[in-house]
Image 1 (cartoon, rainbow, N blue to C red):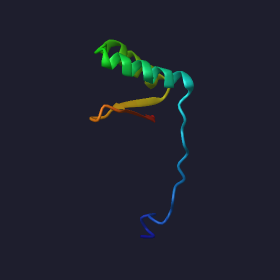
Image 2: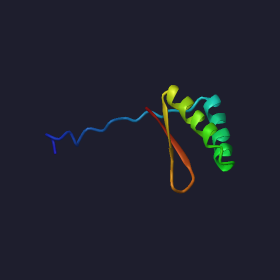
Image 3: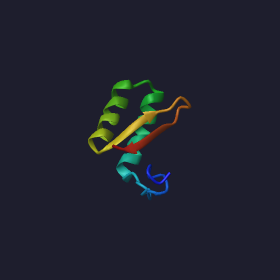
Image 4: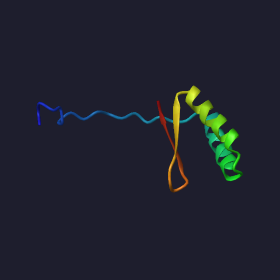
Length: 67
């Protein structure tokens, strides 16, 4: 255990999306419901440019994480 570093605990910091990206998440959901894949992809690219990755989950929820 000691050699693998399994005893150390790494603190996780909470990342909050800026309000403009939160609004884009709503717009992207609407675009996906309307099957506007081009706009949905544009919004995904905007997230990537700002340092966030979007993942569309099988349950219909989109999750995000910092790159």
